[in-house]
Image (cartoon, rainbow, N blue to C red; front, side):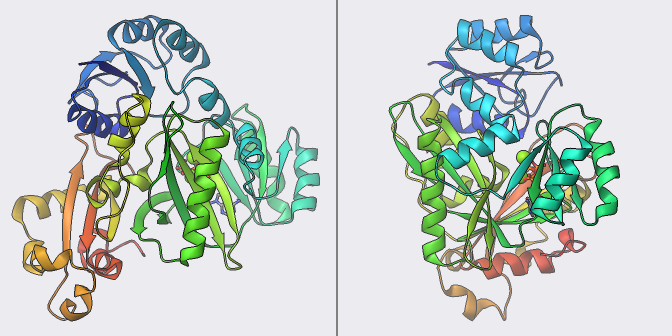
Length: 398
Ligand code: ATP
Ligand code: MG
Ligand code: MG
């Protein structure tokens, strides 16, 4: 079988390797942390992501190369393309590494983004804030994640401090109009080199402290809006000639308008629900796409709520797993997967099948993503009830 090299050894690489192994592929990852989540289930080269010698070794050991984050060093990306096969190409990375380039690509595909301005100085910021209005969101153009590298400017007095703080990163900045959204949605599209495109069902995403807390599928929005979100994701993937997965984050406003927030050219946390809830998982689909295999069927098999397990939840989840303490609260697994069964069963308990995924990370810390749980349910309300009533997440509002 062929070997797939993965730049980055985190949980996304791990789940990619687990899914791809079932298709007969071998995996090798490059990551600085020994025994990384991916390295535990694949071969591993222990080195920094920007290490050219290590990248050369990865290229030598792998037939196909992919990555699990977008901030791949440009020099490494060029070397890998030269010395191995990188079906996703470096252009997709170049575009999605930088918020301004990404916004232009989204607009070129015919999708809307929040009105924005490029910011090079504090004067630029004042002028842009006057034009776009306050509140507005100032973001670093590169390197941000989990809300790091951004500042919601809520008054004129915050312009100076926000600029001083974010300009320290030394990258360009972008100011976005604040979108008063009703919901956050995401769609993951897959495209193969032969041009086949499939989209996964739309997820409704709930963030707590800027970190994804839960994804709800089917998303609770009008059918017309869900179809439009899927269409936009497919169009962006097509227009960018993306290969592999492209995750599209969207804002849905009260007027039914969809704005694209940002893209990710890789498996996405909001797509973890696909592992048990879809006929093909996002990880298998990614492997299929980069290997130019026919894409799998992304259809939903059951309503699902995915909830993240952060460091602060890990002990309670481990206890629940090892003592089966959830079981008395569960209905029988047959009715759990029967749509419509929920109304009748709510009085007696949850009709939810929790599927636990832990990433094997060494070292738990608050806010660190340690795992996730897919709550398969007859109706997403049962999954949401489960979250509300399970003490693991009692401090979070969903
Ligand atoms: P991720 O971890 O998803 O990569 P990130 O750090 O790249 O996050 P964004 O996705 O750009 O950041 O923003 C994080 C969150 O902040 C969004 O999910 C949304 O809740 C809020 N947000 C961002 N931009 C805007 C905006 N223009 N208007 C309103 N809310 C916004
Ligand atoms: Mg992001
Ligand atoms: Mg985001």
